[in-house]
Image 1 (cartoon, rainbow, N blue to C red):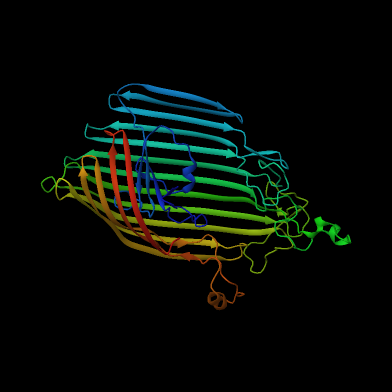
Image 2 (cartoon, helix red, strand yellow):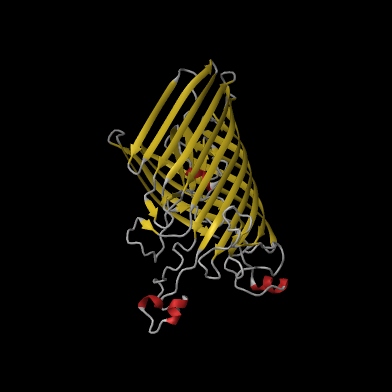
Amino acid sequence: ISIRGVGNETNQNAIAAPSVAFHMDGIFIASPFALQTDFIDVDRIEVIRGPQGTLFGQNSTGGAINVISKKPSMDEYLGKSDITFGNFGLTKFRTSNNIPLASNVATRVSFAITERDGFSDNIFTGQDLDDASSTSLRGDLLIDLDGNSSLRFFGQFFEVDRNGSAMRGIDDPTPNIRKLSQDTLSKHELTSSVFAAIYESDLGSASLKLMASIQEDDILVVRDNDRHNYGDFVKSIPGLPPVQETCIQIFPQPDECKYARYQRAEFNPETSVVDTTTLEINLISNEPILNGKLDWTIGAFYMEHEIENTIRGYRDNDLTGQLRYLCGESFANPAYCYTHDYGIPGRFDVFGADWDFVTDALPTRESYSFYGQGTYSISDEFRLVAGMRYSEDTFETNVTNFFNVETFTEKGTSDETTGKITGELDLSDSAMAYLSFARGFKPGGSNLTFGFTEAEDAAAGRPIAPALVFPTFEAETVDSIEFGLKTDLMDGRARANIAVFSYTYENLQ
């Protein structure tokens, strides 16, 4: 998700905080994989643009999105269902039911299932690609405790089991743009679950809200890394030497021998398991204080975030057209496999076997923060909005880098005080101008794979090589200046908003 061009671009850094924070009923959803889930039983969506950190638990540099689901109601039973059919074998069924269980207890249960053939075909494996196969289930229980307080539990589960996306190689000889030829059976499996509890209480002058969640996401991907078949010509880079014996033996060489050919290469598999626990408390004023001039919000947020990331990459290093997998894998050929001795320095087996890229990364993050925001009415037309936040993040990552030969541990801490100040002026009942200054923050962290500086290589006695990716990345900050005008036109039937803004980044991730 991106807002104003700012989004989560750091896909290599799975532990990196998102630029746009996503929330579900106020609960921060940490894993970017959760955004692939179906949104069922949605009441409304709230969006905050620009650096954020004084209203929600998770700070961000690009903004925040809060998807609000429909709450259970004790009033009456309500249900709705719909079914959709379409081309490419599309079948989509959704149902949602509100069920009162007692005078003070109600539940909502929603279910959705989607099946669709792929838009693209892999003519080599016979797979449909760009297909859809997903199941969503959501349950929501609301208990009215005493008229002034309530307890809510909800759980959401989402599962995907499909062939995956079509990514056509630049030299794929298949003439139809919706067809490709690749020699790997691809796979995309995802399960995502969120379980949360929300306690709300009206204390009179303020409302108390306590939120807790447990989240888990598990994704497995198998993909063709060269995006071609073994032996396809590399025509996009003319002049490469031929690699086929038949080409070498022919003289004079025909045109097709003037190109190199693709090796087989695949990730089989690439997996990520993400576990997250969040706790949040906030207190929101019900009525303004200081003679009705000040509305306020204060809160605190805590998160534990753990990832297990595994990549098993293979490449046909001996140009046989087959991949020599690790013996013991379910897809390995027992007559053509190998046993790799992990953890023995120097034993890479790269050319005798078919390792390409092998790594395990186990990053963890612990985060806590305190935040607050107030709106002070200086006059009937002019308001001043000010907020402040303190955040501290600690990370630790154990990385068994590249060929699983040596494990490295990286640690670090980021802390920052950020805030915002905004002036709002009502020009009329239907027009408001504002000027805002804000600072956003994203904590630093560690990369899932990395190299070292030349000095570090020399000190450790390793061969000196240029580092394309360093072990850690710095915390990111952004300073925002924004001027805007919000208007309602034609008796509220039309709305026109204008904004001019500037973002200045430091250590852009």
